[in-house]
Every structure is written in C-alpha cells, then in structure tokens.
Image (cartoon, rainbow, N blue to C red; front, side):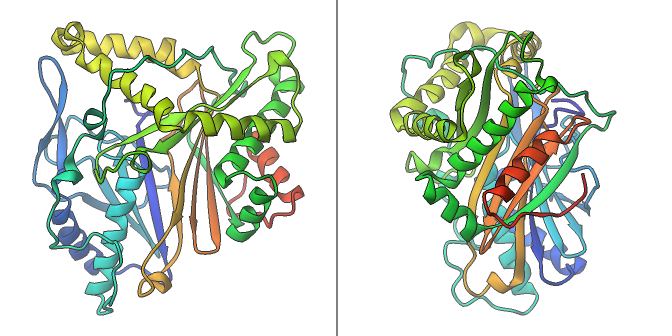
Amino acid sequence: MSDDLTLVFRITASLREPVKYAVIREAVEITSKRFPYFSVSLGTGIFWHFLEFNDQLPRIQSEENIPCTAFAVKSRNEPLYRILVRGCRISVEFLHLLTDGSGALEYLRSLIYTYRSLSGKDVIDPGDIILPGSEISLEEIEDGYNMYFRKLPPPAKPAKAWHLPFRLNEKPRLRVLHAELKVDEMLELSRKYKVSVTEYFVSVCHFALQQIYISGNGKAGTCRNRVLRIEVPVNMRTKYPSRTMRNFSLYVLPEIDLRLGIYTFEEIVKSVYHQFQISTDTKQISRFLSSNVSYERQLFVRILPLFVKKMAISAIYRGIASKRLTAVITNLGLVSLPPGMEDLVDFFEIVPPPPNTAVKMSIGIVSYKDRMRISFCNITQSRELERLVLRHLAKAGLSVRILNEF
C-alpha cells in the first residue's frame, strides 16, 4: 500500500433528499455496533500483519474530490473504513483487506435502513437487510479462503500483458469519469449476443483496448507483449455457501492474444464468453483459492520475519503481478432494496481501488432499478479508452449519459 496504491474502494448511495448530519451520525453509531468485525486496525507482529479490535466508530467526513485516499494504517485508534457525506450522497470507503464490495454493500444497505428508521419512516418489510440489534452469526466472520481450501494444482501462469502507453497524471493521479446507461437497454443488448452484462462489457473494453493497440498509440510494431488481459473479480459467495462479511473474492482473467491476429467484436464476445464459462466453474476458480492459501500455509513462509515477507511481496508484485494485467473491471451487479426503501435512493455508484502505474485503468459498475453507473478510474493524461468504450455503447444503440467532463 502507498499514497497511490491505496487498496481503498468506495460505494455510494445518492438519496433523493439532502443527508441530515445529526441523523447519519446516530445511524453510523447504531449500524457500526452491528458490524463489530469492521472496527479493527492493522497491527504488526514479528511474522505477520494482523487485524486487532479497537472498538472505535468510523470517521464521518465530507466527501473528498479525490476518492479512495489512503488510510493511516499505522494508526491504532480508528477502523479501516470511513463514512463520507456530501449533499444527498452517503458513501462508505473500505480498505480492501477488510472486506470486498459485497461486504461493504451489506453495511451500506444496513446504514441506509437505520438512517430511514431514525428519520421517522419505518420500513415494514426490511427483506434481507442486516438489521441493527440482530444476532451476529459466526459465519459472518469466518475466513472463507481457509474454510473452503483444498490442495489443488495451481493455475497456469499467464504471460505478461500489454499496458496502456499513455503518460501518467501528476500526483494525485486519479481522475474518475462517471457515465450512466439504462439497465433494460444493456440487458437487451447482452441477450442479443447471448452473454451476461459483465461478459458484454468486458468484450467492449477488449475491443477498445485492441483499437488503441493497433493505432499509433499502441506501438503495435515494436511492442513485445501482445496479450490484452482484464481482471474481473468474482464474488465467491456465489460459488460456496458462505455468508462471510470478510473479503471473499477471487478473479477471472479473460484475454485476447493479438499474436494470433486482429479480432472482430463478435470474435471477442465469443472468446470472452467461453473463457468466463470455464474460469468461473467452481473447480477451476478454486485453483486460484488453493494457490493463494497454499503460500500462506508453507512452513518456510510462516517462519520468515515480516520485514522479509514485505520485501519479497513487494518485489513479486512489481515484477510479476502488476505486469500480467491490462485493466480491471468490477461489476457489483444489481443492488436491491426492500419496497419501503426504494424511493429513498436515487442511484448507487462504485469506485474501485485506484489502479497502479502499470495497469493504469480500473472500472466499476453497479446497477440500481433502471440505471447502470459506470466509473472509469484513470491515472493517465489520456481519456481515449473511455471515449472508445462509450462511443461503442452509443453506436450499439444505448442511451449513454456522461455525468462529468473528460
């Protein structure tokens, strides 16, 4: 983690009326007591970092222009998540080691419920929202990775990927462009190609990346790495019967290999679809789970002092992990609220963790009712990828609305 590579993500609920600070402050206090496993700070031992309970409420602050800024992880007096308020917006930002998008969304839904109740508007049927005062299940704090670990053959190591060639912004580098689509139009278009919304959007991004690659910007004639690879997180709770609120996500890596030639859009959609079907199969994705947990369980790794682990992990990340991806796309899916709360929220939005200086681009998608929000997180001086993706969607017949300027 660093000031640039913060590993922090944001989920926002925009209400239909301005947020009342006194009410949201009380709602945060009540809700956070129901999620005590988030009230932790990062401790440092001889062999490992660890999470330790601190019984502190998250900080409530004004929403910053630059999202997902770093936490002071060495501080022992505040949790690794925060609440941000501005106008009609309530946002939560979590350090990714604490939970993933699904866990953070459950906290936010509970917070909205509590806020509405304190505002004097009872919700008759809260549905599956985690209610303040309800019993905390042990399943909520289980380590899903270790719970479902089985020793399996590791996945094949992917080749190095091509990276966007654009120059980086000056610090702070992150710029976020928000766009909005209509859910029903996106569903209809995806069904036309017989793929999911995620598969279709990943295909559009691959096609846009290919266009950049084969243009003068991509330096196609001299670039040695000709694989375009996108990381797509997968909620493992859909693969295993887990109710954990801790981080429990893995990823698939759909790619196109330009050493084989240039792809039509239809070819990309077909390839991405089949890669998703294979990679998201429980038996296949469990190989990533096994690989990740296996390193942690090795005796040699366990007895290494923490300072050695940190140097090794940093070197591996810089030398291998960051070089195997071209971009990252996170789709949180369709958010649901009970009927008694639907009229309170206008839309949801997710900003994924800022990309690193190699990958340069991460994209977050979330849908609510009839609106889909796309957030492009870019640390470069170019907005070419955003333009190509949104232009492709518009030419396909979708109603695309850009919510802030390039």
